[in-house]
Length: 447
Image (cartoon, rainbow, N blue to C red; front, side, top):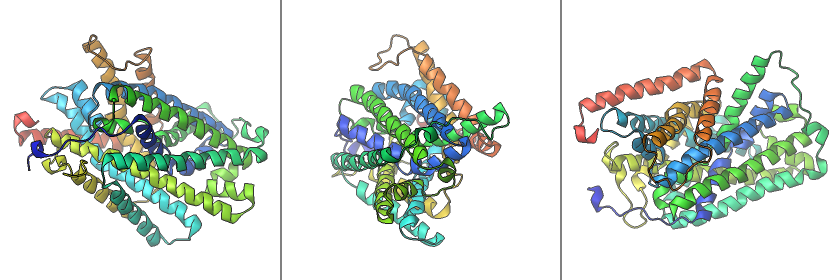
């Protein structure tokens, strides 16, 4: 089937809908799972530093995404950006290929991590065996694929509803703690337990990695660039509105939780939000209602993530860099249905195979060099190579935001365990080998 015969994607998402998609992707189960990890790493209220560093990185990196997204509002996000800024028919095609290479592993892992986190929190409501947890996580992925099997305008409307539930739940969490808040406990900043400065920076690096995982998604609108109305204005706006709103909610949540619960309780809890509500209201039923809403938030995030990721193989297939079947668009609803089914299918399998544990670290480490750092370096190169090219959005104080983004990403990268660093490098090496092998068996025009 020729892609020329397929219908085009529809620019049906408004600014509000695009922002809602971003924000529900950013929240998800992430902060409710990582809050305990971050507080544990930083030994208490000093964990606020990780959330602040995550917000700073999101703003700096968000400027890179905003500039590239406004310039090239197409389906595929980073795949398109890396292709445009590195360009060329030979080595310049390596970077977008490496992005597709790591996405085939990383995207289903993201879906699996969210589904596994969902099943973990679900066990607060109903005790589950390991097999039952896998059944829950797998069923969730299938349900989300079914929800996404529709046109983009319907998805936009669903996203707005899901965002109201997400934002409302976090606001309820923050406001509920006001009468039980202890400022001396929430702002008891100290360095007890750290015997050397190196340990402080190591803890900050690892905790920041988990905080950044909770901020991820501020760029999801770029993956949907071909479906955004007035993208030159709305893509940058949705990115910065999303980051600002979520940063305020995260900082408020972090402060309120450690101001109500002892940090040791937070650090050692698998269901910190549920325990928080149970202590405030002295009611297990209220805690169950809150947990149910958190599960809706987790569902919402995966809904947005699968939506965005499904556009990446589609974009690559359109350009001849991936299997052509992925370029097909649903004849009636105008969305890349083959790509959606494939991403969802692999995510379903991964949700049955893996545990949450170290998946969060693996997800982010795979992306730092190939995606985030490469884009930041690329946008700097693009500025100096083509200084007079039209840029609908230009980052202020260029190139400072891009440089800060690179420095923070590299700090987080080298603060991780050696096995994850080597694993990320291994993805790059194996992808590079695959790229050059592919070149030997592919027509030059398609390489």
